[in-house]
Each structure stands twice: as structure tokens, then as C-alpha cells.
Image 1 (cartoon, protein in one colour):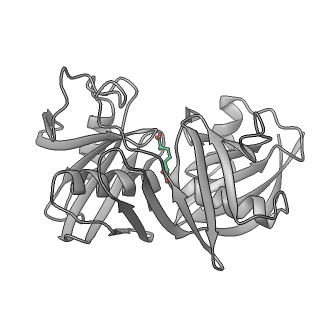
Image 2 (tube, protein in one colour):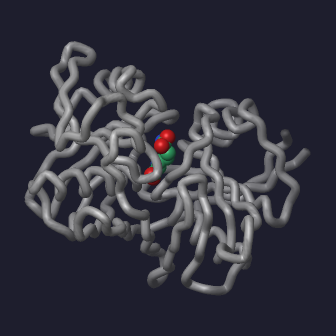
Length: 276
Ligand SMILES: N[C@@H](CCC[C@H](N)C(=O)O)C(=O)O
């Protein structure tokens, strides 16, 4: 079977995007891993599959798979690329797009030439929702991993995030602590680990060790998690500019019970076809 795909990225967080509206698509875990493999496949952090909507309340359904083949519920940079993709492919002619993911419904708005504003939903700090195996919700949690005493905030953006405030993102032990915390029994569904350096109340620098993909050049939901945890702890004020290795995102959040908004770019790189 030959499969058509588009290679896209949001700030260097890269995707193989597959149109399952116009072509028959059946992907198993091994195929996802092969597509994501940077040596034997196309190469990407996540594979995105665009499907017809489950009902009239949405324009599309979109599914997200990490490079290790695991299916997940949320991907901020992927959401922006998805919005660009459906417009560029002529699958929709509106600037406001309603999509269903495993995390629920989302609304995306194309802004100007290449930017997309995404309602990422209401952040959830409830440990059971993250999931985080503790008895009560706290602003910060403590754990020892990989020889480091770590203090982190935790939140769900539809996917699980831990956010660690560090003095310098360059010097942060991203791979060692990221991998160890991701596998820690505190996180039964693993976790995306963000390392946040606070530059000012309106600006942070962030590196994210992603669940299922390792460190990426940018993580949209990770950027939202970092801003939300920082605002909730009183360290940051909305809007927050999040500078990731691949570029900047703007995150807005008015506090508990409110949705978080993320704005940033999305870009197509090339079209391809792969024999499966
Ligand atoms: N890169 C993404 C997040 C992708 C999913 C994540 N690795 C998970 O397993 O939850 C983003 O931009 O949000």
C-alpha cells in the first residue's frame, strides 16, 4: 500500500501528517514507528492522522501518535499543523475549525499567513486526572530521581505534564531527569517533563522531554503547562512568551476554571509517498 503524507512542523516539533479523509488508512504500532524513524522511515516526533468527524459537532477528528507508537490525547504544535493542513489540502474553507481529539473538542483559528490560535481547554490540576499517584493536590511535589532532588508542579492539558523550575535551561539535566521522572511510578501513564527558566513574569525559556519522543525542539502543550503552572504559583502573569529551542509561543490564561490559549506558527515542509 502506498501512503501519501505531508511533513510539517511547529517550531521544529515535526510531524508526518496523514489525510485519512481522502485515502484509506490502516496504521498499526509498527507502521507508526517506521514512519517516525529518522533512519529507516520519514522521521518525526509525532504522526498525526486526520479523520472524518464522529458527528455534526466537529469538522474533523484528529489522532496523535508519539514516535514510539503510543497514541495520546493532546498535541499543541500538532493542533496548529492540523489546522494548516486541512486548509492547504482544501478539506475545509473556514478559518475556525472544530476538531475532536481523544482529549475532547478543540477550536482552532487560523490567524494571518501562518499562525494558528488554539483553545487548549481548561487545565486540570486534579492528581487523578493527570494521573499523578499522590493523595492530595499540592502546588508543588518533591521527588528524588537520577541523583537529583526535584520539585515540580503538575497539570493535565489533556495529557500529563510535570514542570520543573530551573536556574538555566542550558544547564538543566533534561535527558537524565526527564527520562527518570517520565518512568517514575508517580506517573502511571508516564509524563511530559518541562524544564522552565523564568526570565521575567511575562517570559520563560523552556525545554521539554516528551513522553514517547524524547526531547523535542518545542512542545505546545508543554508550553501551556509551564505557563499555567507558573501563573498558578504566582511566578508568572498572562500573557506569557514561551521561548523553546525551536522558537516562541504565546500562552494566555486567566486562572483556574478558564481555558488556556496558545498562539504560534505551523509550516508545511514537503509532500511524500511511502510504500508500506
Ligand atoms: N509535541 C506535543 C505533545 C505530543 C504528545 C506528548 N508527547 C504526550 O505523550 O503527551 C505538543 O506540541 O503538545
